[in-house]
Length: 412
Image 1 (tube, rainbow, N blue to C red):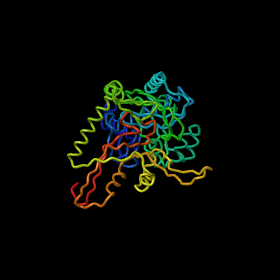
Image 2: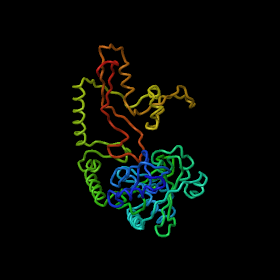
Image 3: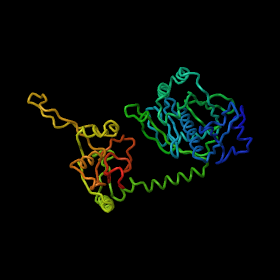
Image 4: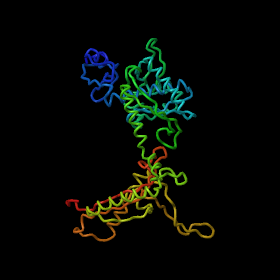
């Protein structure tokens, strides 16, 4: 690309496609993606990025998230903007709103999005002169103001909003008048116009927490997917339908294998007799394989004193994933004063420290090494309710967990 020429002009002059599933939607410069409106200050080599590539789809989905947010604020003016990143096979946007989106709402939002896409609104990037200017323009958007205020601490999804060295926004411009229809705080890049979103679908909505923290405000999240062609979208939707038919949560109920009773709690499965048979077959297979490989079976308790996880370092690094401690063993006088202080116990989130104690229980000769220990250890992880999912993300599980104790030079 020669200096002073936009990437879009260079793409057209090179005869590269501007429409269709292989249309060039952005360019890559030194590893970074740039809009087609980007202009280099000096002659620069760029790599065109097509819509039907992983990066191309990601940009399309990010732009689709902007169109979704624009549609939401047109139909629900009281909605406040959170973040809207691309994700695997799709996108989402979080909104601060006292309204749970219904299937009827999603249908209305899709209709509004199609209208915006048909208009061919242009994505136009502009850089804020200062944080103060950004804060003034975003005064009515409290979540965006928070991102601007702690820009340096942004996590991955928020990088789409405030990452990089500059604070920037994207205006959606009317293609005929050039007037701004809507804008959002965003790093970019984006497709040239909304017409470069050839196929999309809103898939579902759910509750979420601002920045994924339960201590923060409750949000409403809308999920969607966008692709480079209607054919690609249809294929993806077919895969989703097939996945729903094969969803282990659905099959678990239909086959009477397991359930998640509300009385027990989220992420804590109970296995029915048929599920117990499946589980026993898996355990028998695992035990036979471990035994054949020289492992010895052990068993450890479900709770332990706090000091063990302090010594192992798990409390320093893993406390957020552990259930709160249980304070027990305290003895009180008749007047209620403490005669003997108690201590904290934890449900174990992993088996490692207990296996180490088994190894340490007596002196060991190097001739015993390598020593292989394994157990079916029940562990408990404090997973947020929003991420608990069937048997794949639970709060209580059993691991076929193993540890090998060996010398540095031994072949374990």
